[in-house]
Length: 471
Ligand code: URP
Ligand code: ZN
Ligand code: ZN
Ligand code: ZN
Image (cartoon, rainbow, N blue to C red):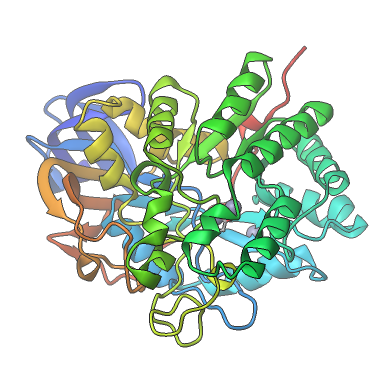
């Protein structure tokens, strides 16, 4: 037969269009789109279903080396399995440099953690924590040329943060080499100062995590890094934007014609700071940074998703077990809020949550859904058009989506290795029925594929969106 696989009669959705047609797949790629395609060796009937480009989760943390006493609960196997079961076919976790470590060494180590373990394809962002001369002049430019074309920098966390001078230095490399810089924007000194005072007053419960990081610390750092990006004249992407005050800064920057991109995450749509205060210590499950805000800020985030302010919707999956004798998020042994590891799991629930409450409730179109969760991530990080669309020549990374399927989220039905989901018991509508990675089924009939190790490392191109403005 002409095709290895034909998917028939689905409603094929891209960021631009929706049309009912067949998809012909050969050697892992899409080779034909049309009506009444010839027979394939295998055939899938997608009548009544949507066919979407596979999700790209461009912000997730898997098997990242952690300080003493903390361990991430998902590695490349459980993380990419969970991703596939939730309709995501590409993940971009972080190769993080430790202070004092060579950046190249960090990447080498991270390749070892990934090799032979992934179910779907993956690329790497770098995390630059120690911008020595060698990093700025040799390692970072070389790694960008070798296909790690994006990196994250932190304005907070003592073991990760850069000062403004260091941020300018790395942004200058992003400009020279055409890389995308992602920024975690929170004012570190304000957080430390507030934390000290809260602890001194005996306020140690999880809910004080939110009080130690009010919106103004995010607003100030967002404003500051926008200025740094303007000075260097290079686009940046602000990750995990939580609410109105950061959004206002980004709207202002856009109004000035600056190329400031923004990401948000499910926790800022579906959780609030009140969730950190529930049932004694249970609130530890919802500790992440920036913290979830309130209902009115959830609305601000929805507005930004629908009106174009946000370019990308990622999970920020940062998995730590609640009952971990090693870790510090344990149900039994309570720790002061500033010891609780930051981050919550969300790889598998990212697409269903946004589809249910966004598309099915009429807040965003299905095309915008695809743009936010697949097409823009591919464009922002140099994977387009191999990933992120349904087009002739693209990888056959596809999701057959059942828009009407009713699901109650239960952690026991998810496929990560984390012992909770903050969305336990939530009732939603819409779930992936089948996920294909390069034409192979990685999730179907309610089961993940066992072909662990088939996922490949993806070298990224220089993202078009990271180019400075032409003037
Ligand atoms: O709380 C969070 N977001 N933890 C993960 C690390 C990060 O800053 O993205
Ligand atoms: Zn590499
Ligand atoms: Zn962050
Ligand atoms: Zn993160």
